[in-house]
Structures are given as structure tokens and as C-alpha cells.
Length: 215
Image (cartoon, rainbow, N blue to C red; front, side, top):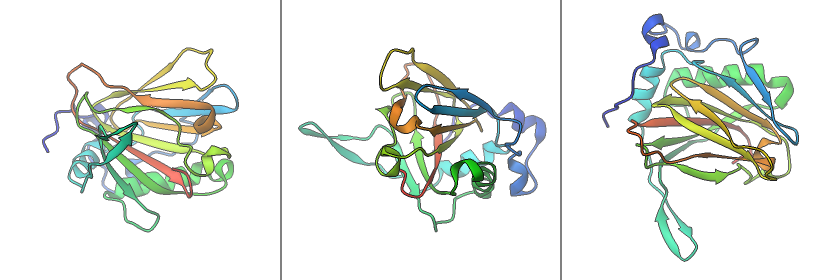
């Protein structure tokens, strides 16, 4: 697959990271937390992962899988490609291993456990999307938890809205190497989506780190 994204300006300025650990900076003191309603929050850090161009090219070449799901009386194609890495499966790039380690270090006290899995989505162009949902299959249906997302490739909007309504939809434009962490009650009291767009956009990969039992 040939990517048509714009390379990260931060990557071009900083050059390639010589060691995997240099790809990520400490999260302490750099995140911006947005308090939502009903005990939900999101942390945001643009341009967190350096060397993201190399990570993106590696991710484009992994064994992506197309899935089909039943919707009402029909079976339809999922409008994105998917790949899931379990707790014991090596991640496809050492920078992602370093990213997971820093997430575990920073959120150890607040989360009380590690991020152990990595679900990945490939949005091939603006026609690929994910509908409104919360990650409520598993423990997050009843417990506060976290899902950390690192974005690679062409920027796409992540939208959030409260399930109870009454508030305007929030928009977080996620670009190359950006991090967003959804925490507290976010998965069961808010919904999120990546809508389709008619604008000409290149491919984007979303890497979602989750604790055990959160899907």
C-alpha cells in the first residue's frame, strides 16, 4: 500500500529516534486533561510519538484483516481494516512497545493495572469510518477504565458526545503521532466516532491500548 499522508513536521525537525525509547517523551507534565460529565475525562497530547513516519510505514504492511458483521437483516463489510495484538503477541514496531511502557508507567496509580492489548484500525480513505459507540463489551460496561489511542497518518476527527444528550459534540482532530486517552466513565457514559469525510484524505492507523477484559 502506498501512503499519501503528509510527513510529520516534528519528525522532519527532530530526525529519526536512535533508540525505541527516544520515540516517546514522558507523559508527566505534558498531557492536557479535559473533564467531561458523569465522571468521564480525556487526556490529549499532540505529537507525542516521534519517528511516527517509520512506525506508520511499518503498520501499513502488517496483516490487516477485513471483517463482515450482521446489521439488521444483512451482512455488511466493516468500513475499515482490523488487527488485534494480544497480551503475549509482540507489537509490530519497537516504538509501540515503548509507548505502551510509558502509558503503563504514567497511569499505574490511576488505572491500577497495565495496558496489555493493542487493537488497530486502518482507515484507508475518507470512506472508512467507525459509528458512534462506547467500548462497553467487557469490564468497561460496569467499571471505570481507560483506552489510550495513538494516531498515525492522515488526520481524522474523533468525535465524542454524552449518551444522555444535552451537550454539544466535542471534536478532537487526531494527527500523526497524537495521543488521546479516554478515562473514568467515558466508555459507558459517552460515545465516540470517526465519521466519514468527503475530503481527500490518505490512510490513517489508530492504535488502541486497553487493559485486560476491555474491548
